[in-house]
Amino acid sequence: IILVAKDQLTYNLAQRIRCQNEPFFYPIFYPGSSEDPLVNDANKLAELAHKRKLVLFIGAGVSLGSGLPLWGGLLNTLAKNVNIDTSHSHWSTLDYLNKAELIQKRMDQKNLELGPTIASMMTSNF
Image (cartoon, rainbow, N blue to C red; front, side, top):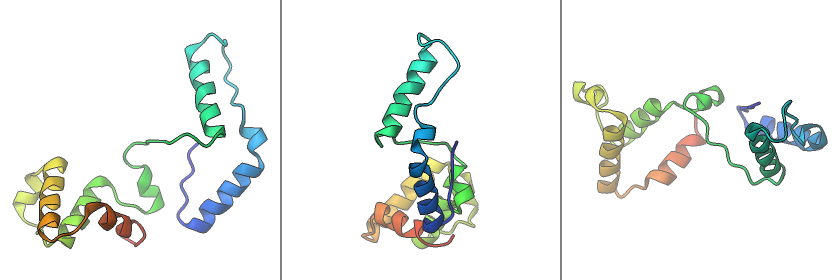
């Protein structure tokens, strides 16, 4: 189950409820043999989650429900922030990697750092 919260208060509440009910969530039971590799993998993941040592990497689109942009939207916003004309026909012919490289070069010229710029954008509305 993946839960995406739109704001910090909702996230905090969900975490509190989850922690209060942790015995219910752990261990994870999977109907299968203990010799089944899926059972072993699931148990390892459950143990890591229980120890708070699990980081999830999830695919494109998950951030959309939380109000964050998709990759293309993030690139367009970053480009506009460094005065790249995203309405120009050349921009639409570039793939994401080339767009990101162009943005990075422009940010370097302006002595801007990518990480802090994106972090500040994540706390604002798109």
